[in-house]
Image (cartoon, rainbow, N blue to C red; front, side, top):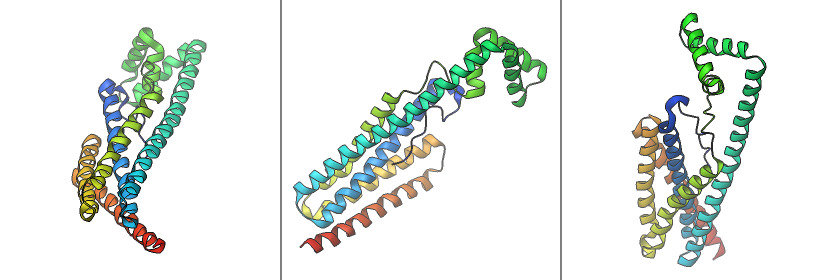
Length: 239
């Protein structure tokens, strides 16, 4: 499964917009994982058997297992990130209480490194410290918004839902058509789905759409071809 970017992967000062873009990107990647994983599974089983019930059982099992795995992994990962953020904020709070002058000089130094003159940096640091010292240091030094920490439950549900929705595309595409057409129908549906997710993820990430789509579709098609022929091999062996 692909690792998901944390909510602070975007620019820390972009506020709610950057936060929503990160979760949207994570949702698109989750759907992409669901499409490729479930497509590879059901096409592989379809290569081994024409039993529609067996294909459906395998597909549903893959959908549920994959969605739960994604949700669990995201929950653990984001929980760890949240714990780290809290520990850093607590450490910063203690330092502000123990040595406020040194912390203000440190904040001014950060703004000097960003291009402000020492005099202006000192003035900015002083005004920000007077307004909200912890927030000023958290955002400038740690790239953390203390009022908007990462939510492990939100991340888990987003991954579960996006993976499940992506999985439904190949599952329905292979279950509904006649036996002679289902593999090709599934492949066509998967290619369309991967074109969409590849294009959307590229747009959100500011990457080249054409390269992202070609890469995405190529990986999905390779997965289906490999699993299909593995299914054929094992199907023939069983018979």
